[in-house]
Image (cartoon, rainbow, N blue to C red; front, side):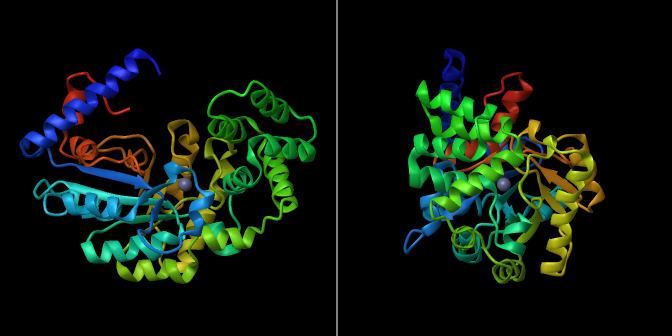
Length: 359
Ligand SMILES: [Zn+2]
């Protein structure tokens, strides 16, 4: 980590603490224009009971139930805690409290079993973005097979088995070289190669063969990870907004425009069939700016989505561009004072002064 980045993180921490503990956040909130901040998480880990999905997920994929509830309860009396759709429509009015929207991506089972009850007891709104293939076919995207294999085999054997199925491809050679040099944090470096450099067909096939060979059962894994249609409909009945998140969670910017349309429209049609209501909010899979492009925006609009969110931090005001809405990621490392500094407009104030501490 560079000195500049370390300094930035330190400054950000001090600034957020001063705002939070001095109570100045309330003054900044009152002075800054009304805004909407969207939080983005994946799973909510239950405080009690079994959570089989946990063994197949990396730590940045979940936040604890009590931790999330503490965040919601801090914001509830001070902000309106809403779904993205409600937040955007309420933002059209200049008056009222500022807004905090909760959102959770992919459609994990704990969203129905843990998040749903949490929202009910805190009277908070939220948006849950659903990948459609796990619902329709009980199949998971390659990243879950990768993490399952990593847990079962370790990274060295995983790469060796990948090579056994892919042959000596460029991807295998790169992965193998990384293992040989044993570069730090292989878990993420390897995933990055598989995500951005590997030809998708080769990757999906090699991981699938390795997964089956190691005794993996895709349907069983999907059952552990993803909710089913009944659970999705249960959330909708409860008032949770359900949004689109493509069919297979592909990196849209790597697809031709017609393939992007199939992913985005296909997901929307599946949700309309399964829920009896067409979704209007879309989340780009992976969500970084380089993971989607102009064709993705156009396809989202054509599929009937009125807005789309990404995975970069920021706040919205009334004139926000509807197909590039930023979100603040939350996981087990989420801290109330940092979220408050963003939500009250504190970081935005600094950005206006030319100092971006958010990323
Ligand atoms: Zn996702």
